[in-house]
Image (cartoon, rainbow, N blue to C red; front, side, top):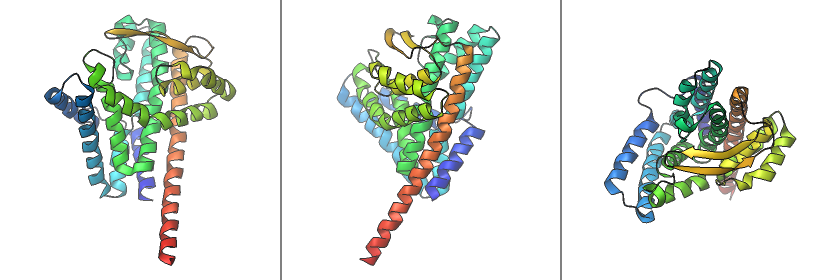
Length: 310
């Protein structure tokens, strides 16, 4: 019950307070990881695997220390791992800037959502990038951390956040990280496999067009280069009656993403709709996490009772 209570309070803290502007634990982890990368870097998968293992193990160890504080430790770890409020805030600020005709202000917010090249984006491109990133990050910054906390408590929540942060840091397909970042990228794929599908299910059930969302998931998700992002992006596309995908410019390279959904191209109002759906999915994932935690607790008590009787 300490874990369930900690998850709920941690999620409420994220919704009420969000990420601190200074001294965020994830930012501190990123600085330490960057320093370790500089110290051990070599353009090989083996060296990258060592880097990933050390970083994830270190954060799990911190989580194990926090676990000694019971519910409070889970609160701290869950709040640290979540990023739902900040995701919604960036999306709303981007929509506000575009409504005001300030495209430069909107471009300045793009790096807070994704790694795309802001200079290559017009208003339509910014809206598409925002909706796609809000969908994907709803899984990464809300659904997955809550499930990780439900399954692994404080160590699980922090280890997941480490995996996801490492993927963002070194998992991109740049020349420097093509081999070194392989382990981080693949581990992130594994860690997000179930959360992405839960996020897709919740987008179907809680979105305004359940049948259309399910159809887009079934028809289009498998064509996305990511085994996980395609699920939530396709579900969001169908739920919001949008078409996502197309040429996608990052710093240093460009990808031609497959088309997801069959509706209109995203506009400013659709960015706000994506934020609203993200909040609903986040709330649904909290319910699932609490139910899972309660179920695990009940199973453990039942098993302990059977062993005592034996």
